Every structure is written in structure tokens, then in C-alpha cells.
Length: 262
Image 1 (tube, rainbow, N blue to C red):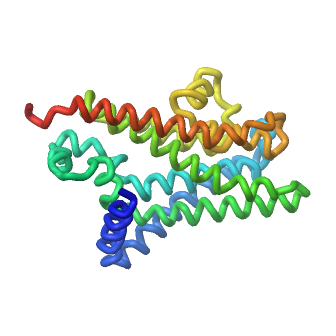
Image 2 (image 1 turned 90 degrees about the horizontal axis):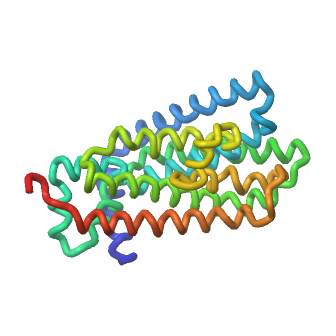
Image 3 (image 1 turned 30 degrees about the vertical axis):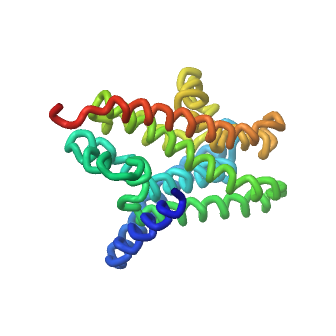
């Protein structure tokens, strides 16, 4: 399965690299849009100095982890994000007749290489934030070690949320509007400390849409904000749990799929 995945991904990358200028332009555009987002965030923090006790470098860590994670998810799973068309237009039928998992085929189709711009931008914010914290006398050794874990877990969490949303299309058929609430809004919310939001929204971010475990919860400990020692351990646990549940929901949904027009 892994060998097949690697071959299909390599074929997808080769196909897109035939249009190198389009790739460079798209990646640069995506990166610049995300730079603008962070500039707006920086302007707010510059005016008010901090957000509920989080300074610009600490918020930069939250932003960098979230930005790289969501860009990684969008890089490797663009067809999950656009799954509605497979249901509405009946394109899923073409995948079901092939002797390969439909999910595997979706994960190797049309990789969105433009998201590399978002990854570079997010990593740049992350590095600058770590440098800023070091300049303030903060120890950053554990932060450096934990960053890859947070990014990998965050990518899995975003993918899991997207897969659950896609799976709902087996019953609802249309999910574009729903994605605003399950993917886009949480991705923006993760750029800020979760403690900033009202109780009902925090409950969502700790349960149904577990983005809090990606960056906010572990940083409570790693930035000495009264977090318990085990908080960083919850990040990969939450990612694993979210992935397990999303795969279960996907498998249930695909068993109940009825072809378009049936």
C-alpha cells in the first residue's frame, strides 16, 4: 500500500511539474496571501501589546504551527477538501470500480503544490517567533523539539476534520457551506489563543473540532502558562483519536453510498 501510494504521488507531482511557472506563481500567491493575514495579526498585537497575556512571539508560534499544518493538509489532500464534486457529479463511481481504496486514490490526485508557499510562510513565522522568544530570554529547546510533533499532529487533525466533513456528503451530498464552519473558521481561530473565545466555542475546539490540542494546549506548558506537564502528550493522542474516528465515519459513509441517480 505504501509503495503504491508513493508511486501515485510521484506521478501526480510529475504531472504538475510540467507547468513550472504556474507552480511558482501559485505558490508565491498563496504565500503572499498568508503573509497578509499575519501582518494584520501583527498590527493588532502591536496596537494592544498582547492578547490575554500572549505576546506577538507566542501568538506567532500558534499561527506558525496552524499555518504549516493546514497548508500540509491542503497540499496532500486537496480532493478531500473538494469531495463534494465526487458525490454531486458522480465521479466517485469511477474510483469505486478500481481495485484500489477510493480514499487512497483521492489522496494521490492533484496534489496542491501551491500550498508549499503557505508552508514556507508558516515556517518563517515559526522561526522568527522562536528567535524572538530566545531574545526575550525564554528557553526554546523544548519548543524546537516539539514543533515537528505539533505540525504533524496538526496536519492529521485538520485532515481528520476534513475527512469527517467529506464523509457527511454521503448523506447530505453538499458540504461546501459546512466546510466554512468545520475547516475554514477553526483554521482562523487556531491562530489565536483558544482562551480568547466564549465557553461554548472552546468546548467545540476541545471536542468536535479538536484544534486546541494542536498548538494551544501544549503551549500552555511549554510557554509556562500554568499548563500541566502532560499537556504536550495530548497533542499526538488527540490527532490519533481524531484520525481513528474520521476513518470509521468514512467507512460507514462509503458503505451507504448510492450512485448518482440511483
